[in-house]
Length: 176
Ligand SMILES: Cc1cc2nc3c(=O)[nH]c(=O)nc-3n(C[C@H](O)[C@H](O)[C@H](O)COP(=O)(O)O)c2cc1C
Image (tube, rainbow, N blue to C red; front, side, top):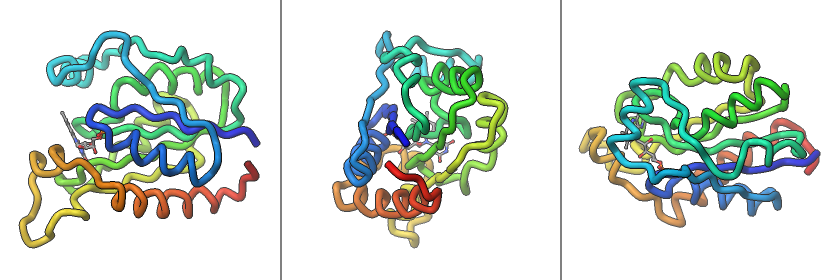
């Protein structure tokens, strides 16, 4: 089975995690970039108005893969907007896909992710794994959204998150 790891990051956490997972699975890692630089203002407008930014590589770059494992942050309870063009392509191709994220988790998880994936792709993900930065911050401090959003995961944290992700991916019983 031909697998691609495809990641988008605004502050590097998901790219870092995706790189670890791609290395562990020995599969190709493609990084998504937006054609116009992402800013906090654009990010918020994308989420409010459900905008779809233009991205590189073009979604058809995923045509030759059997399974695409997407990594991206969660913003305002939703999957980061740069993933939208790819999720739309999944819908038209019926390709197997997964969504994995290292998000903040300060607001008690992101309960709407599955519904959003179903809406955007028309199909259940093979894997959905939302891990949280909150778990890396001293639990006695009750981290706020600001604390989690400012946290950049270390190599050691990326490696721990990757081990959990790879365990879940291996449960799919896929052969790379
Ligand atoms: C504008 C904004 C909104 C966010 N909203 C959420 C949220 O709803 N839920 C959550 O768990 N994390 C949220 N986060 C935190 C990010 O998901 C987290 O910092 C993530 O690790 C960033 O990934 P990246 O470094 O790959 O961009 C938000 C961050 C930003 C900047």
